[in-house]
Length: 346
Image (cartoon, rainbow, N blue to C red; front, top):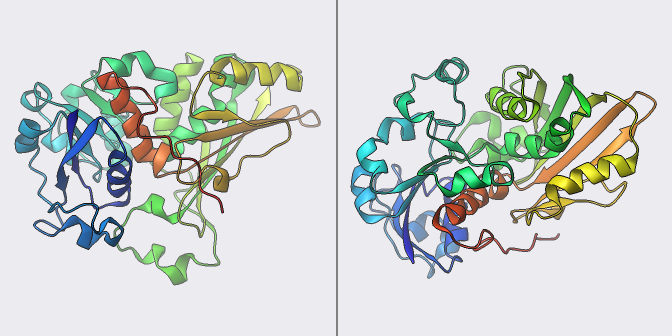
């Protein structure tokens, strides 16, 4: 049994971590961190935890937390984890950071896109990008995990096999993505008010979304060269879910069977990536509340392009579930422990 601490436990990703870890047989949550609700009972912040969690929210003192926890999850805004982490802390505990602080290896790229000064760039070379299906062995030995963003997770897993096998022209990749409103966090923002979001869909961060360099970096590793993409996210009026539709030109003619064999090569043994049957397009409802990612593809011979699709729950595989999956690998637990939830429907 290990002890876990969560800094940012009262945000959407943090509360999802609480929900998942409460069902984990190897973990006890020792610290419910929250700047906004210090000394308030956690179940008063989230009433669904009434008579389930009796703990009081504590602060974000990572130095003190490192003395109590074997693993610290930081479900916090960009910049906070980097400002708190130190060699002393990492010598005592492991960290899974759900922010973007350690996802991008080039500190100048991070600072350009996030408009923040990185407070601990010395840990960037060590941090392991926590996409388990691709970096599993490095994750096992890591003490600092950069938990991937939600859009990058779905985008990368949808496109990765085709890039890895060299079947598409990487200069032609276009990624269209749509997310539920929980992806914007729990903070009060005018653009996320009910009357602004309901009965509406909109693109945002066009040609400037912060997840763009993260996606490019990860796809670049697969290609073995630098990649530039068009990435356009959209906000849709639902609570959870991400749907990615990616397009690219094929380098040569391929059949359905050829491409299906490629996806099966990478994902047939993966617990949480499901390659759907022929002509079945992923839907967010089929993965809601679970750590699954559904992927599929469609070849368009008329345009010599392939359409690659993915769907997942942005709060689970896109945040908290992936963090738990990473933790399981880091501590030698069964990788799916605490993540057995069947997708909810309807």
